[in-house]
Image: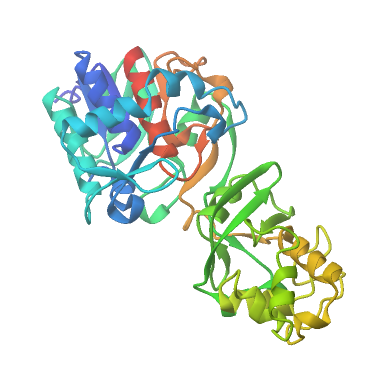
Length: 415
């Protein structure tokens, strides 16, 4: 018997996540015969867990390229401005999926486990245009002769166009792999060094000594890493800091660098002076508790403010007034210096909680090797990379989903 002939398609898409499904439905709308290959038992694994099951599917500000990180900060602009958050919102509205703005432009579905509605929407749109979706399908080999050939556990498939939408390395328990980068290297496409992003930060024991007892405490702060600054909540954990503000700066942080926390974002430097006059016998920790969660106020009142660049748990310290001291016994200048220190408090993380807890991956397929308009590789015509596999990483709050939608659409228009 002769070899079984490979099934032919106009395009094969590797990965049934957000980018892959969205690319497939738009290519199908253009009359293309499309195959989606997904190694998990079901598609859309990261969609399903997003937003605690409510799917933060885009952001009202998602077309702003300044809210994405890349070695080429201008690369994402084309796709994001040609296919915007409003295009995706229109699709959500077409399917009558109830949604709401939570904060800072973040759009979520309404209702528990409502993220399934987004997955079903994508599946319904794919079905309407005849997209073939193979789940539980393991990819064994990818090669190119006259066209792209993909050997799988479901047989062999071929197409003149291959779209790699296999995602990045974040959340390996959902099936994340480095397949995109293996394929990129096979076709001589450069890859920017990858790292966890939107991830909790970890600290040395010297800092954890005061952080760990605060586990579960959340407070609104301004967190800074380099020139990036985010005003959102910070959350203490048993390993360090998490929460939206920390996840945001983690994407900009580099090993060995300090971050800076403003624990009192609304307070002027003389905020304690009127409290001193009104309640001179009150203890410092008690007065700070009017501005901060009580446990955090007590902890910060006991730690000598660190010098710039020093973590709170080590290095040379300024002298700090006793947390038990009455504010009436302290000089106004001392209280001003304390508040100034609380508004620019340096901390030096020792690392992150890694890909297991990272929402996304930074780095990826080098955008210098891709067309900004189509996501097609320059070195291998017909080969496309989209979504998280590409060196474009969005802010927290729906930006990475919008990159998946926009980059998937851009590739589909070129298939």
